[in-house]
Amino acid sequence: MGQPLRVVSPIAGEVVKTNMTIGSYVAEDSDPLVIVADLSHVWVTALVNERYLGTISNGDRAEVYTIAGSDNPVAGTIHYVGEIVNEETRSIEVIIECGNSDRTLKPGMFCEVRFFNAPAKSILLPATAIMKEQDHDFVLIELARGKFVRRTVEIATAGKDNVLITKGLKEGDNVVTGGGIYLNF
Image 1: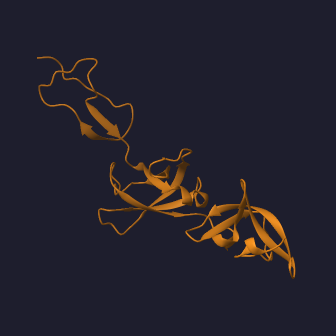
Image 2: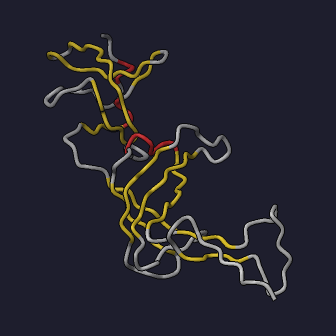
C-alpha cells in the first residue's frame, strides 16, 4: 500500500465542491478534484436596466437582500459597472463586492439589490422640459417676460417621469417645463 496523497491548496478558503469518490482513478490531466473558494467576500452580479445607469457609479453603496428570507441586508460597494448593454434585456452588468463573514450569501443565489448613491446637490426636472435637436438635449430658459433662450444640457435618467440635469443649468434658472415647442424663441 502506497503513501496517501497530500494535496495543498494554493489559496486559503474552504472546499465548496468535490469531484472525487473513494477508489476513483486520477490522472495528471483529470478535471479538478475539489474547488476551494474564499467566501468571506463575494461578488454579486446585478443586471441593471439601462435607464438607471446615470444614477449609479463605482464606489456607490448597495444593499443585497436574499430571497431566502433574511430581512437583514448585506452591505456592499459597486466594484464595476459594465460597458456593454445586453440587447435582449436592455440591461448592463453591475458587480457589487460584499463582505460575507457570516456566509449569508451563497454562490448562485438569487438576490434583490438596492443601490444608494452619494447625495449631491442637483437639479431635477420633469421629462417634459427636455427637448431634442439632432443629438443634443436642451431646455428653454425664460430670460424676461416673453423672451426665451435655448440652453444645452446633459441629463441622466432619474426615474420614469423625471430627469437629472448633470450639466448646463444653475439654481434659479426659470425653465419651461411643458409646451416649449409652441414658443417662438
